[in-house]
Image 1 (cartoon, rainbow, N blue to C red):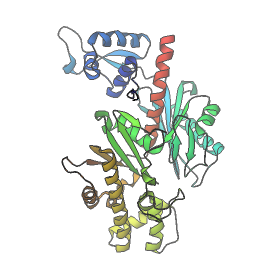
Image 2: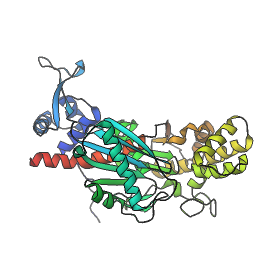
Image 3: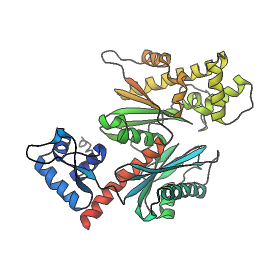
Image 4: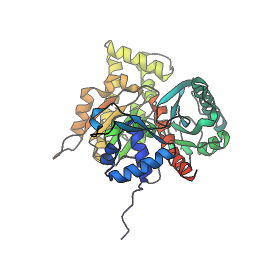
Length: 399
């Protein structure tokens, strides 16, 4: 009895601007074909965007877009003078990238982070230090900075900028509002798995796909989902917490305080917890313990190998659940832990397929993307770019 949900439709000017950003340099005819709009509309709106100082014409060397009797002309974004920063807040290392309006990285920075929960002021100090670092490295004035995107682990309400729970911060922290007040510009906050998914959507395989899932293996286990070219967050904007789905009643203790979470069997702190016993060592940082555990597994230590094998089986269970629930054609496995090949060995993918009901359809494809650590911050920069594009368009039209 309710009317059908109306998906938000972005104005055509914004769609054109974002298409040019995604392609880099493109002819008007190609924009018309890609967006399914008339050539006349594209000509009118791109002329307006040129007049606003957001697009410019450039000579295009591609003979594929040449029209008889006309020079090869394409469009590109005017990227100068409009900057955003993407930041990832993490357990041991915070990272940041400075990008221009076209999404090109101009500078990056990394700073050590204390392996403990931080207060609101401490977190804003860390964000401020990274902002200063990337601006100084690029030699760019703060006045050119339009927005900052921040990703971190935990339950994050993207619309309000509130961190409800995180292993890094205290509960119910209004990080977005406080950082916006302190730095005097919009600061957008989101879950870090969503940031990695945005990086895939803007800069990776997602540029050519409308629907896909991303599963991240890092300090925790996260998930992102793209439906119809848009990041899906859930009705209350905090869904897809794959790491906190339950796989064992009264099972291993998770860092969220509950038992039996998938993360408690796959994430680095879970493997490090067992590594201390298997290797007979005093607990050290998860990174040190994991590297030692992996070396022992590769050298034939059966106890070390069994820890990775068990984690791989639980990961297969989690991936099977993702496929069964959302039916994606493509699942991307990504994150720093991709270098531990036991977690995604063919045995793991075989078990995932065996656990999944796929009668009558082709099984979901799994791709491995071993991005560098800056990918999280780059995804956060996409969050900031998406937010400021509407503002820049509105200001340019009003000028």
